[in-house]
Length: 95
Image (cartoon, rainbow, N blue to C red; front, side, top):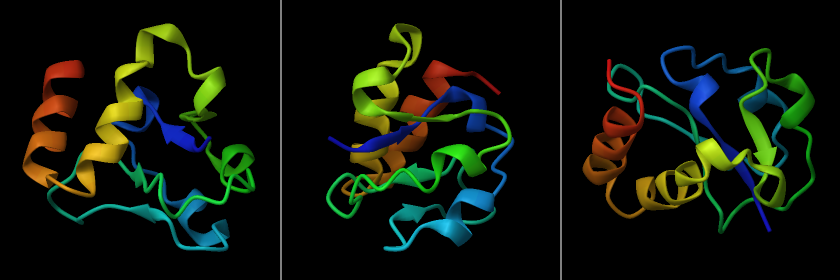
C-alpha cells in the first residue's frame, strides 16, 4: 500500500508535503509537471504528507475516491515514463 496524489493537486502543486516526507518520495519536474507524484516503490506508508496537503489531494491507496482511481496508475507511471504520466494527467483534467 502506498499514498497517492490525486486530482486536487493538479495545477496547485503546493509543496508542503515534500518537506515533511522522511524518504523524499514525492517528485515533480518544475515548470513541466502539473502535479506532484508519489513513488510507490519509495513510499513507506508513514502518512506524514497527508495532513500537510492544503487541498486534500493525498490519500492512502485504499481510500482513494473512486472518481480519482486512475491517479494510482498516473503516480506509478511517472517514474518510468514521464511523458505518458503527463498525458494521463492532461486526459484526466484538461488544462
